[in-house]
Length: 90
Image (tube, rainbow, N blue to C red; front, top):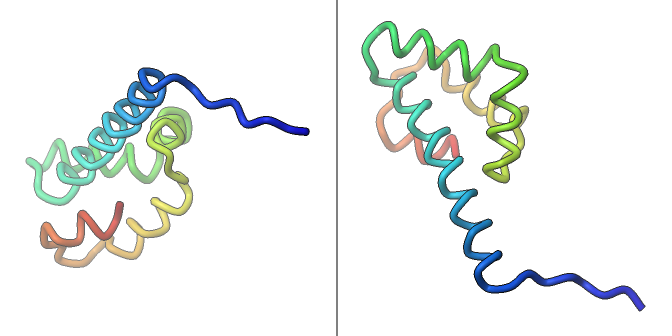
């Protein structure tokens, strides 16, 4: 019989906190891409669309698929993006 290993409540809480933290990093980067100063917008866009080393790792740490997120962000590219679209992207 296979058993599912369940972590302690502390381990589970730490894992959940880490996911929340990495999702906040992604959300902040998207926010900078949408409405930051020009230099920050360009840096955020480069990171979101062209970084193939750190971005996928951050997405995995956030429990997200980098390809799927990029696909959604690509659809938003070039449009006016109100704050409500930020939530839709995540």
